[in-house]
Image (tube, rainbow, N blue to C red; front, side, top):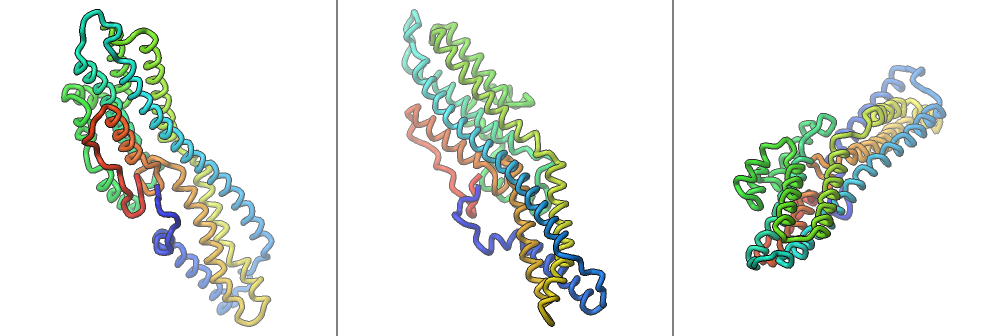
Length: 338
């Protein structure tokens, strides 16, 4: 997630300067061929070019709306995970008690069980975050993307999953969890198994057991929603044709502008270069903004800040357990929060 209020000019130029130079050189070459080689056939009426531009704008708008919906849905799902995490800790604190136990159970033992349930949930949160960062073929994997992904990983995910789980689980459970293909799914299953044991031992009644099981089902639903967004991309026919249409429009753009500017007088035809550059940049920027919004879990600057949200959950839940030695909130790195 980009945290600054606006994109600075250097930031904007950082990922669009090559395209700006390319558009300028292409339009200058087009004008030069027309002007100095006498290639009059390069002039085309502006009307068909404007019709293409209008159609492309509508198409790119449709794609960008769909891409934004994916990002916003991902953020809503993680908002629900935050809320349900707090509810889970509240239930663990309030529902697990010695109220229904025939014999005496120490308060320390009750607290350890509550802590176990909360810590296993924190392990699920971090495991889910790790699984959602796994790279997919349709995500951005160019050299420049890998460079930034590695840079952000060094700042936000400099521990292995096993190291993160060691903070919350026993060695035996870590080994058992990492042996599964979907560790997050298995951790919720372990929670359910633990609740069944607690009910059998009289540490919660049927009603409380059912309510906590419902919460686990909700967490499964939220995990499934994240996996759906991660594993099913924006249909590639929309993403690919959108890029193709933008470049077709930019290709024909100087041919249509030349005739209009040439009619204004001697030398005015060279206005084709700056106007092609600006218009082409606007269309390309619209396309690239939607392109990066398609995949909200790929470890780049415009992701959902899962690491920061996971740390927020950890701080809140451990504080609910009465702990005082808490980790610090995650801070942005170069205006990016992951």
